[in-house]
Length: 613
Image (cartoon, rainbow, N blue to C red; front, top):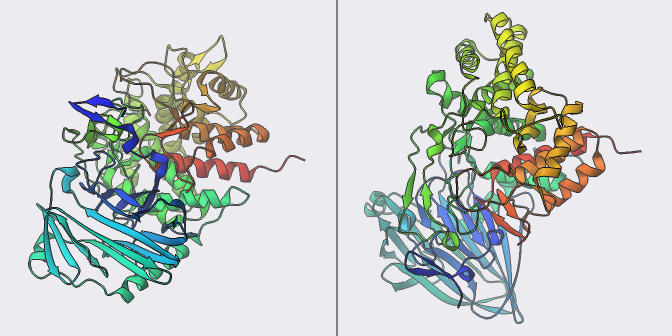
């Protein structure tokens, strides 16, 4: 049996399904990944950034899981119920067939008072299917084996430290060891079985646990959840053949939303590797300021103004106060301290260590954040929502900070952990902060040092066009004094630094396609960044390329690139952060919000262009 040695133990690659095997479910509070085989291998309750209660995605033996699957050999098909994040998995074993429905239950008013319930419903479709159920909770990223207690008929609690689960079913799920539950059953056509896992504070379980819903109420909750998601989906719109897939991306973004605050997590996972077996493993269960502009742009274009406005207001609340205290990322509740730690007890996905929680990038200097916030305010001003007096004072601070700091090196869009550099994208976003500040001051009749801002804005442009531009190829480059290219350069027209069809930008796009292409997709950059392992292509960059080509009127090329990137989605329409074209495998945290945002933007760009005639 092949494997690789990690910390004295053999990590067998075959035990870990491909990342593409997973589906994503959420109630805009908690999140879970469900494998093609019917196993929940990652689940964080009651928040996306909580310690996992099922986590064998990052530690097959220690992490815990919850599985429902046929005992006999079987085939599997799956889909989301249309317009929802309710996952349907169909098992076919011999002459029998059963379908499994997985969701976190939703309800009106659930933003503040959710059920906090993971519901699994399995139905017999035809014949008979023998199933096995296993509930193996492991709290705090596999650190804590819970105390399993019998509470009543088919009711159990799992308690460990500050964590508690109420586990109920309408079949005899019983202890199969000190720290887990299980059952075997034969399901016939027309029969239905529910497994409910609710997050409950341990003290409530001790004081007389809340009564679980009966089977009819479980089914009603499922139907209410389906209706909730379909009502939300019906508000969105995308023209053209790419519309359904773009709306699926919108559903993913909604699932990544933290309902009480409006924040959107970058991904529901941590430490899925960007390079196989290497250390490029980061925790993305937080919200990044730069994603705010992308989010508002993409969701608002689909008609989801409430979600776009919710994220905008979250960023304003979290960032407002002092430009000196601005961070590039926050917890989904607005938390500022995201201390990065390595967990030694988990082997990591397919042996990729370390497993990290928290993210040290929160303390980096990334100068593009000024431009992101000003562009966000500008976009919302153009939608009829100009900043009030208090927020205007904060925006003025941001513009002044950009004017004062634009000449500093920073870590850039890609949060490099090597030495800071003078990244062109960061300089352009400082330019954007000044440009948007000037526009807001003039259009809103606000007092501001517009003349000085204009002088600095022009100075930044001159510096970029001289030091960030390679004369030989007549293209923009990654950093001052560099000849290398960077996928982030594809974003320059979004803030108006250059027009989409500016000859310099057209040449830059073509040079990026030539220099950064791998299998029809783009890597972020070619330069070494001081980290071990060779990462895959970056899917958001590839969608940015498709959007650029569409905006330039190069529709055939745009369609070719778009379809190539879209082909990296799994069968459920979910995208990872990166991709290995040689192996055809997903890499990085999953599903990745930035990829789905960029997918929407590219689909909208293609739909907006007149068909070639």
